[in-house]
Amino acid sequence: MYLLEIVGRSLAVYAAVLALIRIGGRREIGQLTPFDLVFVLLVSNAVQNAMVGADVSLEGGLVSALTLFTANFVVARARARFSPIREIVEGKPLVLVKNGVMQPRALRRENLTEDDVKGFIIEHSGLDDFSEVDTAVLEPNGTVQVVTADADVERTRQAMRRQSER
Image (cartoon, rainbow, N blue to C red; front, side, top):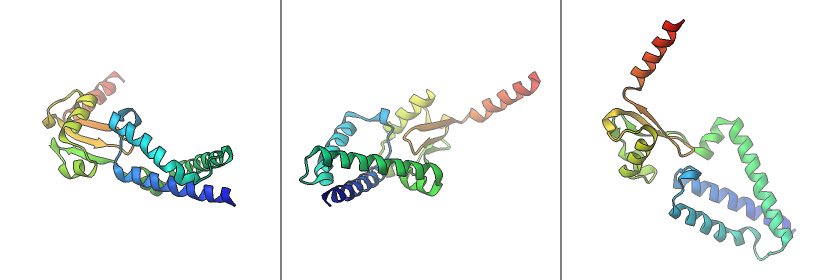
């Protein structure tokens, strides 16, 4: 019976941590700062006892790990098959810059600073002037997509070249 308690505790912790991470904002794993890494390590240590309780046996740890892997597999499958679940688990893209103008409400929502967004834009487009940015979008996976103001012009030129080559 105590193994079922470990399964229930592990599922509850999985759901709670997933919800808290989802609420807390998005970052790509490669973008973790030392602050983020310390946070992840401390959370994992803090929830360990909540999952297994007083049971420190190998069996209890394996049941908890198997439960977490199974829960993650089920969530991943559901996320891949059903877009409403994908939106709940991952979120929606968020516009950070629109028509060269920073969107302060979006920045507050994701706990980002203007300097964070400037860094993303420089990293992804090489631009340091927002007036040249048509749109910058924070994707659910934490990456930033930048569309420059002249991107449409360049795409049009490329399409015209392709047509003339035919």
